[in-house]
Image (cartoon, rainbow, N blue to C red; front, top):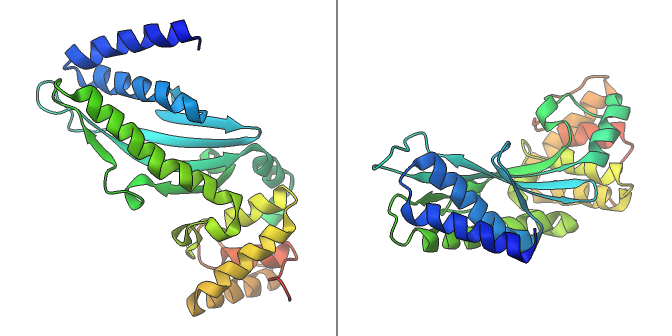
Amino acid sequence: MTAHGRSRAAAELTEVLTTSTQPTEVVLASAEWMALQLSEDGFTWSAARNSFERRTDCRLDSIRLESSTWNRTGRLIEFSFANLQTSDDKLLAWRQANPELTVRRGKSVAGIVCASSFFDLSKQAKVVITDVDGRIAVVDGACEIARAVALPWFRSLESVATIPEATLRPTGFSQDILEYFVSHGSLGEARELIGRVNAIGPSYQQAFQEGRRLAHSGQQPRWHTAPALGWSSAVLGLDEPGH
């Protein structure tokens, strides 16, 4: 968008945000207002998916918004940052080409790398903008919260050491991240991930070994189950560093 286009969009959105009491209109204007600011970080607003989205090569980072079901004109206007998600086209292609090396997932998450509820990362996920007075300042503050929470989370995939431990829990996304590294040819990082997960504690080690036993017996775990990482390590021929 050109500087002139941004200025015009900002003026139109300012009109809505300082006058409207219609929840749907105000929430959409708030999203578009934040998108003007988040464009500095590479994000655009997708009204079809209610998400701020940033595409870098084959990777897609998204911040999804939700309107409150209790929104009513003159009573409440509220939205929430619902969740963060990273997906990857190269990973999707790898899974499609190697179905025997992965587990079944729904079509909507076929290319998923990892995801998190925003509520698990921040106590400031909900944004109330019922009052016209000060509404823009509230939306600006919400945008800064989104930046402070989402950007470090998305950057965490740049190093195994910075991936949040919650993402690696037995029913989390360690298997998905392992496949992401493998699909990009980063086998060193894949082995490092296995080592980090097993170092978290005995329950993680037990789940890992159970997954390897399933693989060796020709069985397959379900997605998002504790043995999934161990199963993947076996079918992909990966061990921890030093093993």
